[in-house]
Every structure is written in structure tokens, then in C-alpha cells.
Length: 106
Image 1 (cartoon, rainbow, N blue to C red):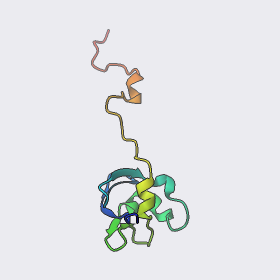
Image 2: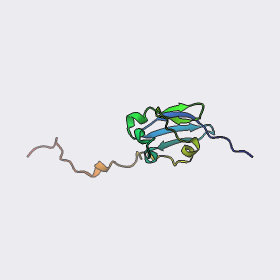
Image 3: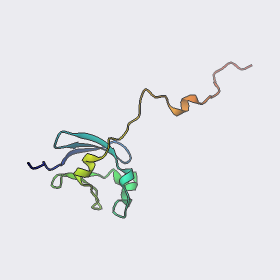
Image 4: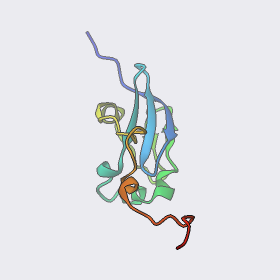
């Protein structure tokens, strides 16, 4: 039995170095690629403005950038899902005590 070739069918930029990907097997994944941006070909992608120039190559079935950088779709398919903010968790700034500027002055 042959395994189907994994291809990316849709990509959306969702953060400075994060992509929302949809694959031809129906899987969807949001991945942070910053930890993977090592080496000369990936160095320009560390700049969020350049990273945002991501495109879907329909022939290769993966994401590409103008400098020729790309990732194998199989690699992206296996990356863990990026953790997103937990809306029920309070901000770390919640514990800070700030003076109430509207409090009555004595």
C-alpha cells in the first residue's frame, strides 16, 4: 500500500513567524517556524516583513519565499501545533498593582 503524497493546499500568515496550513489529507495546523529558521537560506526569514512574503507553490505543494527557501510539506505536517494564548488565563500584568489615578485625593 503506498502512502499518499502530503501537499499543502492553503497557507495563511497568522503571526510574525507563524503559518496556518491546510493539507491535502484534511489536516490543519498552526505552526511557529521561528525555531526552524537556521542556516543561510532561512536567515532572511527571521525578519517578520520578509517572512510575510510566504507563498504557496502549487506545483511543489509547499510554502516558499522569494529567496528560494522552502520546507518539505511532510516536515511541516509533523510539526507540533503552535500553542495559542489561553483566553481564560489572566495576563501576567494582572498582578501588578498600579495606583488608581481616579481615586479621591486626600
